Length: 280
Ligand code: PAF
Image 1: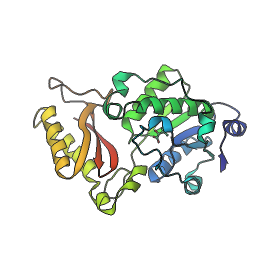
Image 2: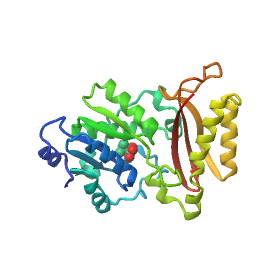
Image 3: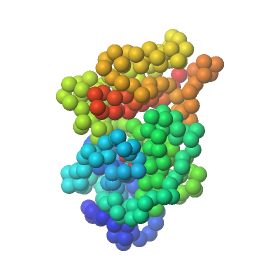
């Protein structure tokens, strides 16, 4: 496995565009990332994994500075998972000058949910992902469904810019108790970790009640948020959306269809996100 830090070295290793698969990450890897790498490797092309903590997608009060940088450990994990090239640029390599050109995603999708609570987040994500795509030139890129809205935004960007890249979704990997794997789980105290599964449970309960039609969605959401709050969480959102475009169902909508229950909530100082696809 090759570890490169510059775009020039990456291009030298992969001179022909469209001949690799790609998994972008911010490092501090866990089994969820490795599952995405294994999925990418199944295409039989060289696999590139990028490791870059992207300042542009963090608000000033967020965890950019303390986000764990664990390159050596990450590389040890990536090799047996089937990664061929690790692309680990420093900030100067990706942002040699202030990044004054940015990608502005469609607000109809990017200003909802995560974008509402983290203004500018998807601009930062799209800008770095477009730069990474330009550096790596992958044929296929794999993004985890845990970042559900991110996956949708990247798909839309790839489509609208006619990038010759297939965006593949990877299923969410979960711990034995059902907690979605996330680099930020490492911030949880032992006690918080024991409670963290309550987020996935709240999604399941909301989906079940929505399916059963026990009340208008607004009421179900309020009750679900209250139940989570009573357990010590601070939810940003806990809602049911159309899988197609993340718009909210109206009470007039037929509930038959493809839905996603989706949530972000803080447990102590740690903000977790999760989602659950379901059909009615
Ligand atoms: O999902 C992530 O880890 C990041 O948002 C990504 C896609 C690597 C861009 O920095």
